[in-house]
Length: 422
Image: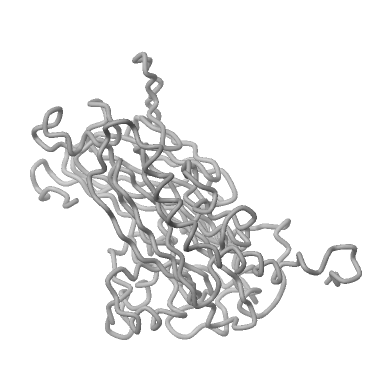
C-alpha cells in the first residue's frame, strides 16, 4: 500500500481524512436547508401548487445479508467466515426508519438492507428526507460519511446533490435533512456518493418512483387511473421494481476483513434483482423490522426484503420500472412477451410536438446508471421467465444450474387477483 505522505499526495486529501470536508460542510447545513427551501419554491412552475409534503427518514449503516446456499463456495471470499448465522455476506445499506423512536433508530445500527427501500413521491410534492449516519458496526475504524444522491435529478442547490466535493456529507451520529421538489415523473435512482465506487458496490442503492400529476387530476383523470407519465398512452394496472446490481464477493470480504480492494479488477460473483440472486428472487417480500422464526426464509432474507416475482391477471397492463446501479450492461428479457419502452432515464419517449419515440422490443438494454419504464400486456395465464440474456449473470460465478438474475412473471386468469394497492 502506498504511503500518502511519500507518494506526492497531500495527506489531508486521503480517503479517510476527506471526511473532514464533509464535517465542515455539515456545520453550515442549518442555513443551507432554509436556503434550499426558498430556492425550491422559486423554481416551481407559475401557479403550480404542490399536492402534499412527504417526510422520510433513512439511516445508513452496515450489516449482513444472505446469498443463496445453492451457489458454489467462492473461497475464501464467500461465504464469509465472520458472518453470523444465517447470513454470509457483508454489506452497507440504507434502511427506512420513518416513524421510529430515537432509541429504535439507534438500534438499527449494524442491520443494513439491500437494495435500499423503494421511495415513491408525487410530481410537485415537497419532499423532506432525513438521512442519519449510524456508523459501521463491523468497521469502527472507518469514519465514512454518507450522502443522498438522487441520480439524474436537477437539484435547486448543490448542497442537496450528495456529491461530497460540492455538498455536505453526514458524519457518524449526525442527521442531515434534504429537500426536494420533483418536477419530472419517471423512474430515478438514489445512492450514497461518499466513496461512491465502494459504497455503491457495498449496497447503498435504491429506486425512486415519481408519479405524474395526471394521476391526481380529477378533470383529466376522473376515474383515478394510474399513468407512468403525463400521457394517456402510459396507463397501467400494476407496477413493479426490477432493480439491477451486481456484487463482487471479494470486495465485500475485504471490507469485512480490513483489507483494500483493487476496483480496477472488478469481477462480479452474483447478479442481483432487487438485492437478491435466484432462487431467492422467487421468495416473497419480508419486513426488516419483523422477528421471523429461526431458520425461516423470512429471517434469512429480511434484510433483502423485496422479492422480484411479477404478478398480474391476463390482459392487464404492467409497468416494469427497470434501473441499474451496477457496473456492467444488462439486457432483460421476458420469454414470449413483447415490451414497450415508454420512458428512459425518467424522460417520456414522446416529444412536445407529439413525436413518439417509444418502441416495442423483446429485450430491454440497460447500462450503469440508466432506467427504463416498460409497459407490457400480461399474456395468457401461466409462468414466464424474466432474466438477463447475458448467461454469465445466470450462473453465480460459473456454478452449475441457474442463479443470479432470474425471476418469474406469474399470470393468473382474468379478474383473479385483486387490484394492486398503491
